[in-house]
Amino acid sequence: MDFSKLSREDWMVGGGGILLIIFLFALPFYSVSAGIFTATFAATSSPASIWGIIALILAIAVVVDWALANFSPETQIPTSALGRDMTRTAVAGVIVLLLLLKLVLHTSYLGWGCFVDIIVAVVVVYGAWMIAQGKSTPVKA
Image (cartoon, rainbow, N blue to C red; front, side, top):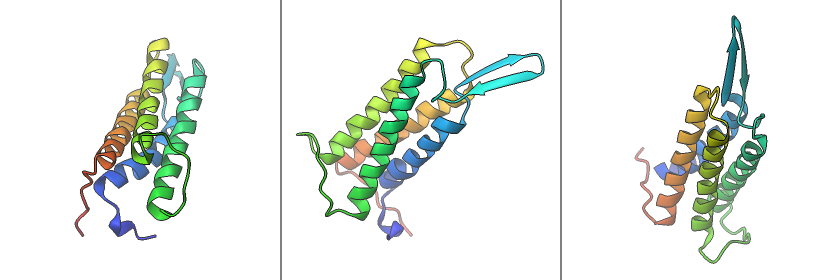
């Protein structure tokens, strides 16, 4: 694995995708306070936990597909008629839509983590889009 050959957009998709997976478990999507007690709930927790869980599964799929494309390019996997890179972009876009849906369905007690999750997901989509367009920027050593 030669990480020096990865472009900035590769880091956005790979690194951002890994961060998104962690953040969906760790950051407080919802936060409820009562006096000195505070309860926080991650994106994969209720309410509307199904959307967070599906977003998590799709984020894992995006990272695995990106890793296979970069570190094992000879591996062939099924894709849509749009091609592998554009399919990855579309799946990343669905992640953003699912997180926005989760946010809209229950707007009470939003935690700061919901905004971080959505921002990181948008970064992943942007990186995937730039890769799909062939506009990757190499990182200078």
